[in-house]
Length: 203
Image 1 (cartoon, one colour):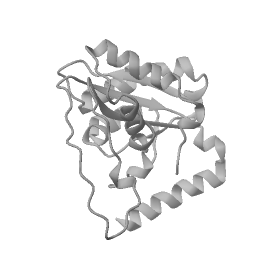
Image 2: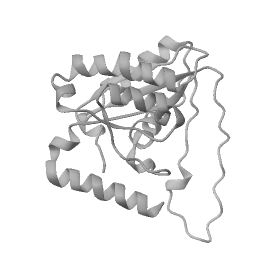
Image 3: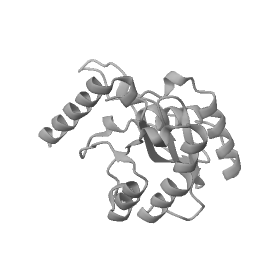
Image 4: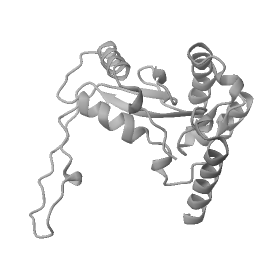
């Protein structure tokens, strides 16, 4: 596993050394996360510096509301490209993810990033089953996207949780939403007001 991670990192480094910023500008990062109607205030005990003799911190019991929305989010070197919300009761499968790439992401790239499709899309996502299923792979080939290598257990290669999910849920903590529309509006406004530097690509 370490060898596969090293090989992937070296390959990405070679690509960057050869093409520089042009390589980073081709990367489109994406993943899914749940957004709950009510996110309790989060405490980051794991980020606190403590002495070995310090007492263990008390953990806050997480209590979320029953309502939630599945957000699939894509961004590139510049800004967010696509926010997509799964219909209530549906799940992310190879079929739904393939349709999302074909019917939502590609048109969004054509509309918001002129010339991007001609330049070539480097898709960066994790190894969740809907992302790696045969039908999804065929769709990615059909769209002429290139998948950036992402070995197992490599969350650092798809930093959605670090750059989007956690900060988003922190921002929405202690806020109660009544329906999906309120969630979507809050998420959209939060993403819209993020500075460009908020969406870096790390390789």
